[in-house]
Length: 69
Image 1: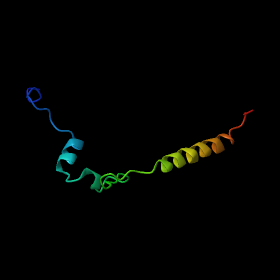
Image 2 (image 1 turned 120 degrees about the vertical axis):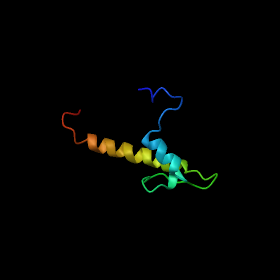
Image 3 (image 1 turned 90 degrees about the vertical axis):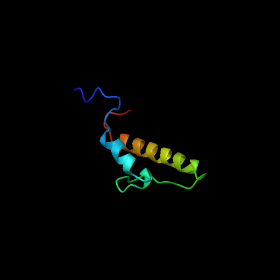
Image 4 (image 1 turned 90 degrees about the horizontal axis):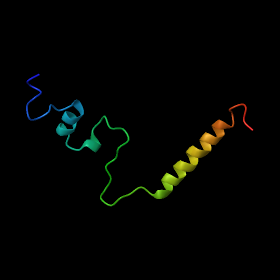
């Protein structure tokens, strides 16, 4: 217990991995994170399209639920 009373707290596993990584976005265990060039942004139309697609999928799936009006 006296070891925990020291000034610095121990690092968690995630903090140790990030401290050892050169570029966290390019670690092999990161699947969907991509480091893009400076100033490059995803088009807003991708987000709008994703919203429409998910909304359509939810409405289509809800149409199979019995007891609706």
